[in-house]
Image (cartoon, rainbow, N blue to C red; front, side, top):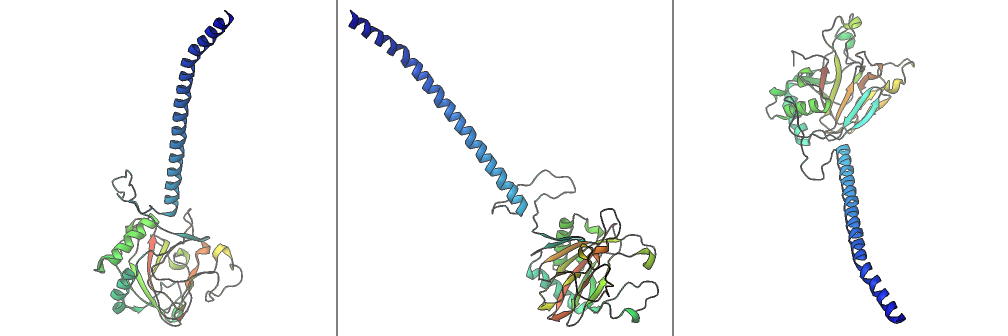
Length: 295
């Protein structure tokens, strides 16, 4: 009797436990599957977002076509990316490496070479051509983008507008310049102080330089007052000091002559160091705070 009772009791436990065990197993299995899927999906989403942020930061798309976004009527349908380095905050100066191709640069040089004339200066009150002839010794020519028939300057001008987010209508005609051995441009400002040049309808707020050639030695673009250094040393406006940017074919340099509040930036004093070896070719675009009618 005892053995039967015991056997009956064991059998009853077994019958009662099996469904419970199966249900529990199913619940844990589903919970584990759902949880692992959620974690996996979350990790995948996090990884994708980190990759996108990294691509946006570096201007890369991993070899795949970037997805464009909704845009306004005046916007662009494609995504542009620019590699750049902030060279200075005082003045605000940015370098865009490999902004243009060798072929583009050489097309601009070929078009401009036969048009070169001795570079001129905007004269201040009391100055004459003779008294200022040693300040700027390069040769150059002004060229509107549409005059250059290969489309090189038109492409450069459009890319400049995208890089600066300043419409093309604010840019003067390109000033294509050549500096030969010993030629230079003493330190100066691109803005026109009304106290020295008379009333101004608009101002050159920024300058964009596209280096069209490599330079063997010398020819750097210099900022003597970068970070407001050398301001009180009695600077003679000739010595090549301060921040110096070496020309390299295809690189572009953007710097602002005005502060965000519209006043002149004293740190934006700049010049071109004498060329020691080779030639320096550069395409300069002065950008104004108002659209210009002489571009």
